[in-house]
Image 1 (cartoon, rainbow, N blue to C red):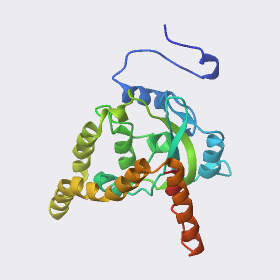
Image 2 (image 1 turned 90 degrees about the vertical axis):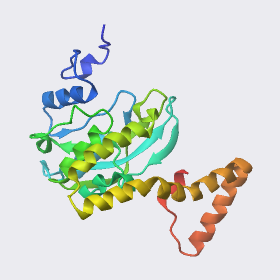
Image 3 (image 1 turned 60 degrees about the vertical axis):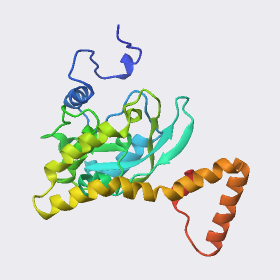
Length: 249
């Protein structure tokens, strides 16, 4: 029997066969009556006051003036303990198409869309891994995306999640759908070349991160953290700004 302990908090719920997660989300959107739509998986959470923040950003004088708004997302473990912050990045159609460049980042849990943006489109039920990215790709061709520089949701990492299954299946769907938007000719040749070189470039970019990780293993945590504090003080005195993501490494 389906667990209905939250029934009193819901306007409507249904338990029935469907064609998978994507199909179930589409059914939910079809039943929704609100002006702002979003979805979140059962393992994930919204942060306190996230809905209030979204309404303030999306609405002016009772009207929606920003069609798609998104923010950052905190990564938590199975016990709900904070691990690090997932920082979002600016979004354009080209950045979404060239996914291998990693020049975009949209945490699905922290995305909110005006209802009218989904009137003539929905999630692609043939996709299992990248249905959210593919939807944002189509939306980006029609509507601007607005970024909120604060955390709106929490994403729980565990061994049974699709994210933990590995990147191979994700990349396979990413590439197949991305190719639909490649312009024939020079752009297709460029993107094919870039994608083939990506693993090498990505490995080179990871070298500084691997060095930091090795240092942390060689040194005690307290010694490593102390060195980072000294580095921050030196940079601050010299007028340099510390990247926000470094605060969570």
